[in-house]
Image 1 (spheres, rainbow, N blue to C red):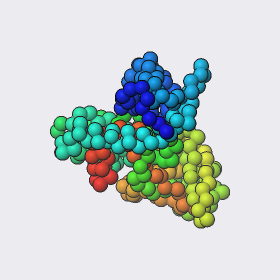
Image 2: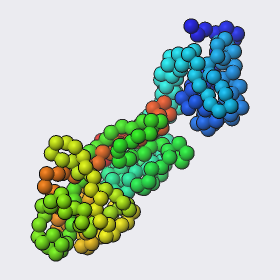
Image 3: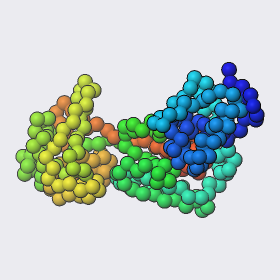
Image 4: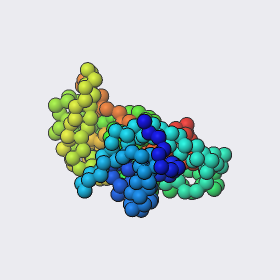
Amino acid sequence: MLRPMNGMISLEDVRLFAAVAHHLSFVEAARRTGVPTSTVSRRVALLEEALGVRLLQRTSRRVGLTGEGARLLERAGPLLDELGSVLDRLADREDEPAGRLRVTAPVMTGAQRIAPALSAFAARHPRLTVELTLTNAVVPLVEEGVDLAFRAGPVQDAELVARRLWSLPYALAASPRFVQEALRGRTRLARASLGGLPAVLSRAGAAWRLRRRDGSIEEVRPRARFCVNDPRAAIAAAAQGLGVVCAPREVIAQHGEALVELTVTGRTVEPRELFAVYPSRRLLPARVRLALDWVIRHG
């Protein structure tokens, strides 16, 4: 049983212990909390002294939890998260968000949905400054000081909170001239023909993900004719007749007669799942929560 033995328990010491326990590293805990490594080590030692138990096993190569440390983390972790959320709400008034909000989003979805929603949100809250970066690169949130990211799934980083927002239907498309000349007027294609078709890609080596009728997924790696890292430019290149492009169905429709949607026998193009991603629930300020709720409603 954990009980105070030699003095008062500091909540800050418990918070620093939890950071070390989560990352099994004093250096990483110091980086995440902004507290010097020597201070983190000293405060954890004071907590162990106050409790009268060893919480962490330290060697020259690694840090591990003792049984007592694991029990303290299990019991105190949720309480620290809840306390952090309460303090965030007190410090950041929800009726009028203020300060800087840094967001990243994919180029295509960001321009189509995220940017218009966030600009409307900023117009309603004059004390808020929004910095939106449109990029398909995976930005390290903590290192870059990003409050909120929108990413295509799957999101596999266990240190991030990922909230699914939308499923975006995708399709294959090409220009009418390409359909007539390269496909001989056919808009329904056989699976076996896809690998040989000239394609317009947003990333070298990118694959098209197709769902079979039984629900399984297969990947097709088309022959790249034109590659550009901006999907909007890729769609424009496809409209000029350079090849087949895989793009959001709603964007294909916006191009009217410049693009013709293609289908594949026995397959459909796998939709893209879009997630809102942020470092942790405890560190999510009210201005970020409000912006996310707004994007969900209006994006």
